[in-house]
Image 1 (tube, helix red, strand yellow):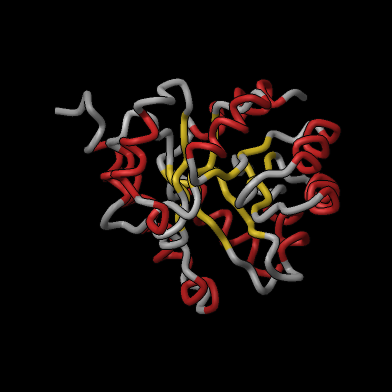
Image 2 (cartoon, rainbow, N blue to C red; image 1 turned 180 degrees about the vertical axis):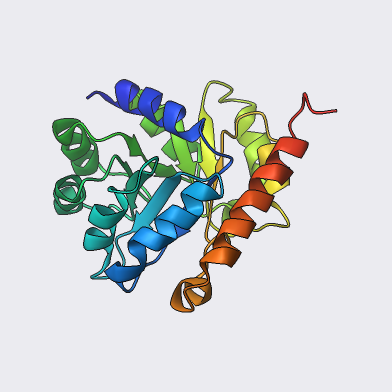
Length: 220
């Protein structure tokens, strides 16, 4: 799968949702009910970060939930790609990108959303064939204003901003013409997950989808 094919696949995945919940999971036993709550709330595209030992078994469990599109986040090296693919991840997300990561995702046929935060990084990834990128860390790298600045020289590049996105600012990001969706951890915080508060997770997901729909340019 070439970078161009990966980006096309990621565009299709990102078109399903306004927000990709970024999940840090400490206990794989809660993975299935968490995924079910998010899918029921209208957010079926899920990013499980490879930051805990529970991440890989959690991906395996979530992959069994009907309607869920489960990806692995925080991919940093070839081994991460191999583990994510073996666990059943349907896409990968990286905070940055390296030549080794590009080659590994190509070999594994894993759609990759590579991270970039500067014009030079966008140019390098574009040269590789990527035109759907993660803008990370979004708020720390200039936020919505930076999104507007990047849209000028790179109108063909689409972004999924992640990092510092909240319920209070995600609509502003979604209003940017080059933004397809955002990544956010506010949908299912570690406290909610720890407390098994699936009702709250479902409600926040539903409210976020409703807010995104209300802010669509064609909405009345």
